Length: 289
Image 1: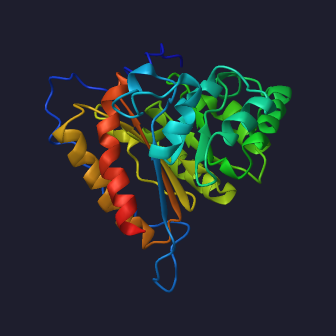
Image 2 (image 1 turned 45 degrees about the horizontal axis):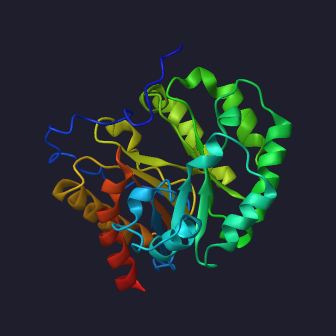
């Protein structure tokens, strides 16, 4: 069944005037595929950031006042540890381009490119495009984090065949996370259970979208030793800070299960509003190291 897509910024949002105090995280999963039998904690890394770096509005709030456009990525990488790279959703970058991006960042930085919509939104697998995209990702080298596959909002469970064709074609030496948006994936319990088991077997993460207006997508399923969280901000103030603090508490809990890495990306309709929300993530990371 086709559902008309809404804009990216509309998905999962509620009115800015609505109260968000009752937005809390669901309980942790009762199981995880990476639970340590001896109960010991693993090393854990929280990587965080925004979906863009090339914004003039970041000069001042995020970058020093004299930052040149050509230095935006380097300045971003000094203040964030990862980027949800939305630019790759619209076109496949060249190998030269990804190598250039990687060269502007420290070795500890991670790029999380979004899969091109020609692959994630199509009904037939485009093998040549997939090969070109995977080839371009090699330019990131050890700075490649988790590649993000976002299904369109209209893709319900009848989209299974093109989805699994794509997932089966993914290279095993790279990490991927899948974001589902249509409610049927979550309301059809048997389908969700089978999908979760498949992702666990493949080592593919299931992205968690903390959307104030769509709590079904805050599913808390852990299918890999890493997790990928997309945080949709609400008020860019106290409520969002409270929600982020709740996430930091959840990461404390999950790292004792053996979770090795978490990627946390902040989204706001006005991206500069997400900048202050980086502070608690930065402080927490500095404290636990």
